[in-house]
Length: 243
Image (cartoon, rainbow, N blue to C red; front, top):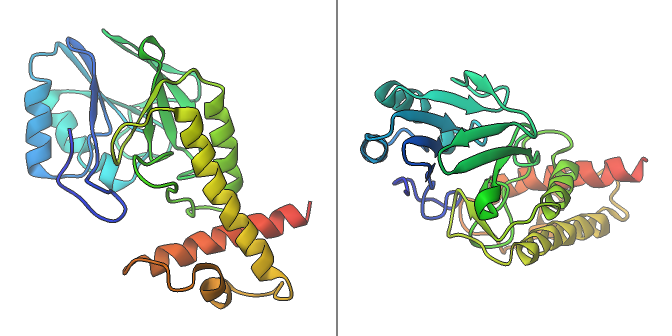
């Protein structure tokens, strides 16, 4: 189910996934958009047990949590540090539905507490914002160390037997190993660009390197997110050079 919040970041909107019928998990209820919340309430009306499961706390994923939980009488499961979570999940924990388990996989990078959920019965991954359904990049700029964490999370996902990934934004992804290669390759290309740009400019700020790395290739409105992403890449390169 897709919320009505399309944007450059959310693509066609946030996708909410339902796993189970009588014992159902609502994965990322999305933003507090009235039509979307009503649709979710209707979709799980006949279930006897309802749970909300969060990948992380960004508003486009978790903004409707409280309203939906109150409307359907659902317990809220998710990572530490996310508002309204009553049942904390850490790596390896499982949420039980009547269609199988959803196993939490800690995949920091987009946020430090980001979780994906692996559905072994279907060899499926609910990827949150770890991957997007189109393109080759996602937002990785929120906290110190996020780029290194993101690379490690990609490697963690390679360990799972995944036939299909369901990102929260964009269509499902098959050939998941190749998708992981593509997202890792994009980030490595950006790292190399920053490495080259810092030669002779070791003390440069993100603003000073912005044109060198990105030039005029960015869509309108993406300049500030790109600056933050560049700062995270610079922190990664400088930290790696010091080890």
